[in-house]
Length: 538
Image (cartoon, rainbow, N blue to C red; front, side, top):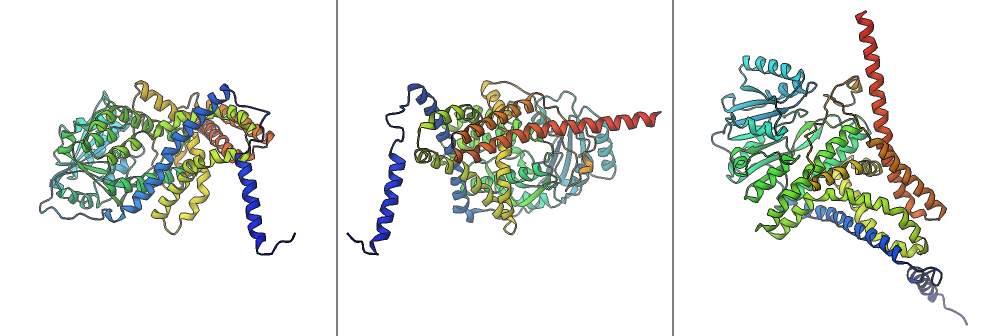
């Protein structure tokens, strides 16, 4: 029998497809091994959780689609302008901010706005020498004719939310701008934001954050990527599509009437900004986002400081979900707005789910040893695309939108970004569980050191650093667990899982060893300075 040449390609394709089909659907261990009830008890929850996590991954794709679909709705400038400018109060909430206080006030008084219509409130809850220094600075500028007011509380009731609400007692502005201590307000901030409030239903104008110390170290560069994804794609998509989005607690301006109508600043969550945002939007107030106006700020430069910040945000947003979702779901807002709000308020549930996945991964690998490679890929590939590929696409597109000429460099940062996400798993799992169980905790501030660029000399000996406690040792234990899984995967020829397992090893070891190393360096610097002071005193 002979074959014509044109038939060969068809036969080859048929042969390959036949082998592929048999590889996918044939059971290589048929008659040798059969899954028991125990195996199913592990596999079912494992894949159920992966499927749930993939929903949040698919939502990233939907956010990207929404961003581009509604691109024409982006806000550039105000539609109309005030004939007479309204009065504005600028609130500067502080708590032990000795290193950034002077820069903050120096830059705030430079804001361009008629002095007779402006009030600057320094809301200080400090318990260290920041109090006396801030008071002296305010007196200095007040003597120069600047409309600056200093308010100091000794009880710190309600933390930042309490300070903001307390400041409203003497606020004279129809609108209230808020800047955290590590921000540098642009001089044209008010002139570029205030006119959007000509529309009487606009309650908030939020601007984009930029970063003074993005190039300080590896961590700050990854933090910049994470926040750019939020401010470019998430805020961009939600604001353009008419979905709810949140005031970020700083670098924004709010209508005083909206604050009062929504029930004021409340401190039963750790993210008072998101709480107020949702309460206000449920009452019909509109929010405006201005990505073209950016406010420089400072990123945490220490691993544990970054983790503490993320803990506060994860716990606070989960508290908001627990508090607000019942009212939101009962409201008469459109279904698509409700659905987006649910996805916005609940993403941190992925952290405890990831812990469960981590615990199940080794027994799942043992059980799935009896499955063929193609069967595993048939199950895993869609979940990998939804969970991991959506992450890569999300942050790369955000960088391309923000930095069209240099965005490709971000490709090299993606594995590091994912490893940093792994390093947040333990502390954010605790945050979510505390929120769900109603465990109360104080508002823990993120230390700021007035670091700009790569000025490592600023990190010599600084106050306000918190001890990490048990966390890095637990992270090292988790990293070792995943290292053992790598060894098992190699021993069972399960090579496709190695890249993902190594991400977990790297993430946990980076967080654990990095935190311990930074604390060790802090002790060395402290001891050197202590010896120097002792010798000088002699």
